[in-house]
Length: 317
Image (cartoon, rainbow, N blue to C red):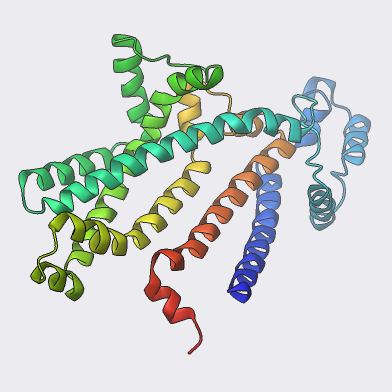
């Protein structure tokens, strides 16, 4: 087990290293020259000023040298200083990340509860109108982009009914929960459809297993069969998909934060790209990729614990 964990951690670090180089190179390959922004704009630009700025920020060095310097600083938890705000990038991330993390956590709770519940209900009532309603509703919600759903939620629940605020993240637990309900629901709509479909299919396949038929023939209560034999064997793909969806949400908050005016890392990334604030853009993208890789690795490590068959296959004979 320790060897397997070590291999996966080594793979995580290798993937993160490769992703960091791609992020660094892609940001510097984007249109626009950060030296022009740092020099104070084109109206204040002179060849001497431009050369001095390039030397000060090491922009005149080769790309590989710049990457090595940036990576070394990142390993020492020094993400640089924002071109636009003048603050340390780590301070900007520390002030913005809790909002994004709360939003993703709230959305995860919503799509897990609603998605798994709808999938189980559809599988138990397979072939009935309940099953058809779940399939039809999930098909509709899956086809609606999150930002379109967010605008619709704002127009109806925020503006028309006035039940929820449409901007800001609130203060305190109750205020944060109230402010983030609409954006979390907008993020969770598409995920509910995916999780419900996966749960339904996994439940149907698990319910067709031989040991389930034997349990029914032995006269065990149907509720007990579903809970102990069907749902338990269906948890593997369901948990895996929930982890993948959550990891994707960490990198997909840009549209929702823009629609609802939230001060998270998604909106910080948009501002950094628009102002050519490369240190901030690199740090936010690296954080998103690191979060995605970490969550998917944890799900991969937890999967054998949920499915004894995988644990038996991986154990030595």
